[in-house]
Image (cartoon, rainbow, N blue to C red; front, side, top):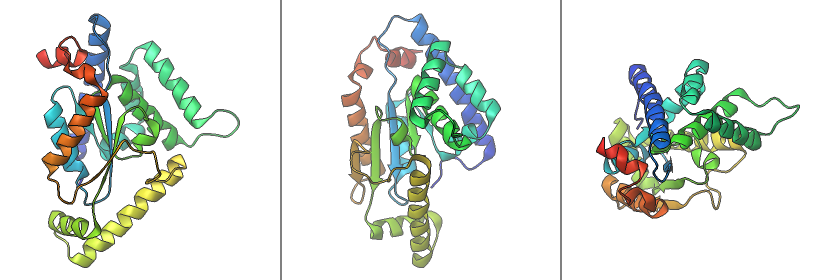
Length: 245
């Protein structure tokens, strides 16, 4: 299920994101502490529990972690003023780095880069620059290879049952929704990044959620985050300072 449906909530979350970017950038510049910018991406099949897991993981990690779902990312990518404001929340050096990576990922030259693709990559790199982000979907793992990249899967019978319960659908309706969702996500990744959603090496963790609770899945990812970013447990880190504020 989607995390954000109400446009007012999307606007609120975008505002929070910009404020968060600025506060972390300022703290990193002001305090002489190890800089760490942890990011988790979660790719998921419909019915595998992605949205609920992302929210539970954010609760476990605490401030200043934030979930960026499809609606938030698309809203930023498709609004030039919001994109500009978000990028300008970072310092000049960070903006230069992001532009350089965007060009290296998408290429430069005579062929015009498709607008949405370029904007999506820019948004994801901006989110990565501040860190403390859980990015749900949108092929973020193909743009942010240094993140903890997770793929959630489940067997078809379990997915059908969960979708039936979540959306109050019949079995046939749930199966149809799942087929359409799988196809849409596969096509999006292929069209946007020229990659396959299930390709080898695209994820650090592939978790089958059939017999796991939402909290159980979130705990597995939480452990992986602390292994990848051991600095988070140091009292002198930016993370620790933000939590004390």
